[in-house]
Length: 364
Image: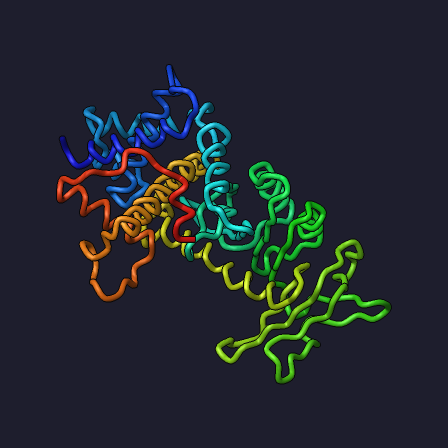
């Protein structure tokens, strides 16, 4: 049995285990094609269809495999709601943390497109939960798109769960933050230094705030100009290792807690790096259709989750010494997962054939 087929069997078995009923008919065929696709992405470290098909365990000719992946990305029945949303819900339940921390950000993917992603903060990484892909280059999404992604996210989070939303300066829109607050969630969002705030009958810019000799200074219960419905706290945060102050909006108290959570916003950058230059090179997929890129992200996101899972298994089973130095480990859990899979294949050792999502709670 080839290495590619062994890893495919493990992935396909795990995918089937995530559904309560045994897959049948066309759904079974789509799920099988998805498993081949995931397997090819992980082994080829690429999202280009010719590269993926070259590493696929399918017995058909590479060109036939490539066409099957292309058809999957065009298939209207291959959707986020059916093939990823149940998995995202289960993942949130599996990461047993008191607070669900979600970070928002966007990045270029494919050819001439940009993806807006909401990721679950986990072990210095962000596990993708939902996303929107639009045509465009570098720059910010409109607040309307932020609201659309927030609506998707609200369908995933169980009621009563404590949630903190993190975002950079793109996500300081008053309507966006008001909707988060209305849902009884918390937020910490960066804003611009020239943002005008209103306190009573007085107005000031965020840059007018001064930390003095302290690490941070905050003004409670104020509103951005022209947005009286959003009542929040304005914070200026400046440490010695910062090149310039960071200005924040938050509805969290105490403010020290808001600073603690905001440090985790940057985990979404590691997800994009793992999807791009350090991992699957999704930015070189040459796909320019946003709808197909959204479907490609289903497969790439699942490949990412499986890789992180293999990293968890390696740590749980004390396998780090076999694939890395003994005294310390400076690899990310994503890189550990890639190396662990390669090691297991090279040693003809067993590959986990059942993804146990409760493992994600072991090393939060």
